[in-house]
Amino acid sequence: MPVESPADLLRAVAERQDRQAFIGLFRLFAPRVKAYLRRQGADSAVADDLAQEVMLKVWRRAAAFDAAKASAATWVYAIARNTQIDAFRRTRRPEVDMEDAALVADSTPLQDDAMATAERERRVRAALKTLPDEQAAVVRMSFFLHKPHAEIAHELRLPLGTVKSRLRLAFGRLRDALREDRE
Amino acid sequence: MIEHHVSEDLLLEYAAGALDEASSLLVATHLALCPPCRAVVSEAEAMGGVLLEGEQPEAMSEGSVNTVLERVAQSPVEPAGHEGARGRADRLDAASLPQPLRGYAADTLSRRGWRRVAPGLSQLVLGTSSGPTTARLFHLAPGTRIPVHSHRGLELTLVLQGAYQDECGTYARGDVAQLDESVTHQPIVSRSSVCVTLAVTQAPLRFRSLAVRMIQPLLGL
Image (cartoon, rainbow over all chains, first blue to last red; front, side, top):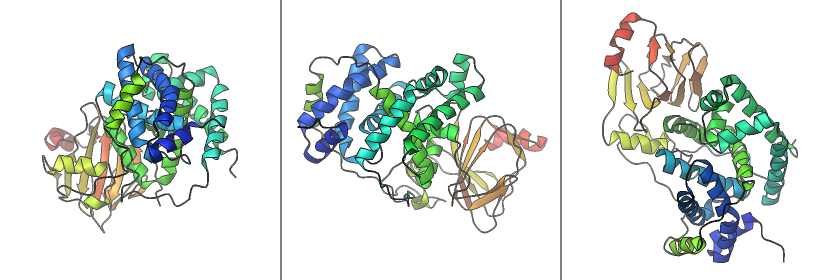
């Protein structure tokens, strides 16, 4: 029997409220979300509680997961990021409401399936591994510690333009990896 | 067609969760109107996903998965629902405002009204968390000319309704102007209709005219 992918597990939770599938997701993601939250300075107990909170949202929102748009890890990352902002910064992070009538819909239909998404993420992973250290460091400070570019520049004692260009270069590599198969 | 987009730097900061609430509100509103920028944000979020996968797992407390499963038993999977247009749509075509901006506007209007700051110009300061950055809606009568000004920090303006022109071009629904200290401009609203914009400022505007600067605190600009 093939091992189910995280995307399959999410679909099983959305369609059948499959508790075994959820346990699989929990084992995979909760310890990583906890480690991510510890980076923000949360102690073990707080990180544990918040990671549970994130996983509860994963269950509740499973129906909104779309494998053609993002991998399971990227989708969980977005939930963890927002939960963290609510909890630690005590502010809201306004988000696009994809169900809103006033939303301008995308006219180019998504042709990619979940397999293509998984393949692209594999390439992103490979691309991120080969980033020069100086670029990897600013990507981490930005996407993991959620620091504004100006704050990263201040901490690393770099001109703001240097931080922005490192992030742009890193993102450029990632986009090249994402678009390898598109003409 | 949207011609003036949010810069890639700002989209990256939004995707990373590094923007304050007011700036996030403006970016999210532009994203609701701009599918190409939404695609950029999705691609950028993939960086976060890959980093999360690469984290060294840290053991969860014992029984935590059961605790969560007990809680899910009491909370069904959410249907994909949303709030419709509601609240006092005073001076606004509320249905044309994308979420979450519509909610912020309705929420603010339930507590206070628009404030007239000059002939043809009213503002509504939105209730985002306090900090150096403010979000406000501007309501401009057709043909209004804003006095020549520059900016002390970054100013972002998103057009929601109508259009205006300045030295940099024409801005219509969905267009974003990203201005800093280096830009001095004089926006002029198109004569054909009212213009509504969402403006996010890091610091007060700097008007060139001394007369305007002296009454600026009174105007609340």
